Amino acid sequence: TPTGTPSTPAAPALPAGYRRYSAPEGFSVALPDGWKRLATSRVGGLAYRVTFGRGGDAPTLAVTYSERVGPDPVAVWRDDVEPGLARLPGYRRLGAVRATTYQGRAAADLEWLAGTGDARTHTLGRGFLLGGTRGFSLRFTTPAAAWDDAASRLALKTFLRTFRTPED
Image 1: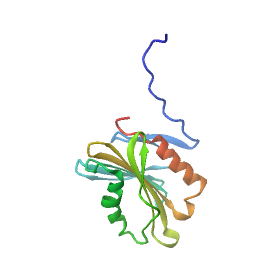
Image 2: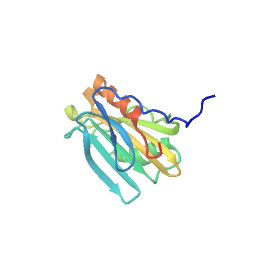
Image 3: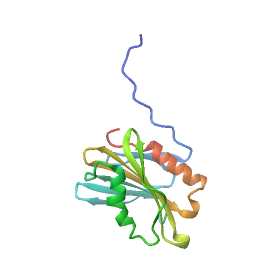
Image 4: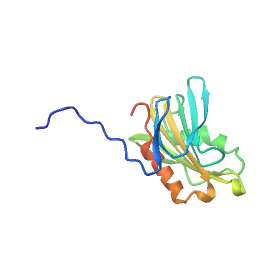
């Protein structure tokens, strides 16, 4: 019988042109080459948002952590987050808020458009619970005209596949 220590799961292989970023807050995610941390906002010790991108406009990835989320990720998007989004110029939700699981945790997706003309953006937000009242959301935003481009699809897939919480 084999002996030794149990192995930990290997980090997912990264696509060409991506590198792993480890945040001081404890989470990590693979980012495309040329992307950097653009902005950080905090609400006391209870919440923060870190935004990544090349600089300038979309595409971006926003990672938000909160210690004040409810127990239902669908309700969090619908009741807590969407009312603020609805004030964005040109806001339009695409489909329903969808319950899902993410990395074995209760999660929900919200997809929306905002802005107008060439400035129109398309965002997918995935919120998921860590337990208690703690949760994360990942928001990938790109120009609406580029949503179905191969680079956008790869970026979204890679962000969702490689994101790790401080507990992982």
